[in-house]
Image (cartoon, rainbow, N blue to C red; front, side, top):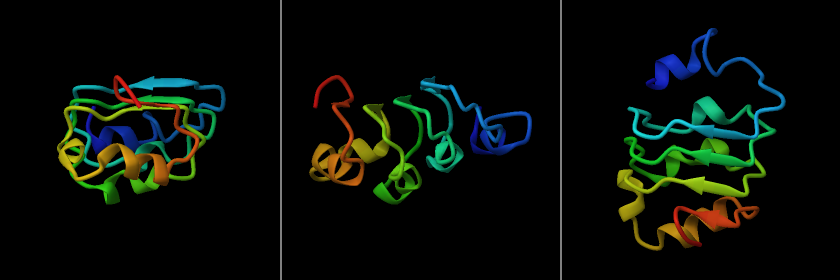
Length: 99
C-alpha cells in the first residue's frame, strides 16, 4: 500500500473506530497523514517505509500512541530521533525495539 492507497475511500480513509494496532511495515509510505484520523490506535508499526523527516510524522502527533515502530525509515537517522519522537508524541512508551 502506498500513500494514495492509504487515503482512498476503500482504504484507511474509513473511520475504524476500534482499530488498536496497525502494521503497514515495508511499504512505500512517505508520511503519516493517512493515520491521523485513527484516534483508537495505540500501536503503529510503519518500519521499512520512506518516511524521511519529522514533518512527515507530525500528522500523528495528536494521537495517544503507546508504541511506534519507525526503524528502517530515513527519519530514524535524524539527530536525537527517539527524543524528538517522544516530545512529539508524549504518550509513547515504546519506540522501535527500545525506548
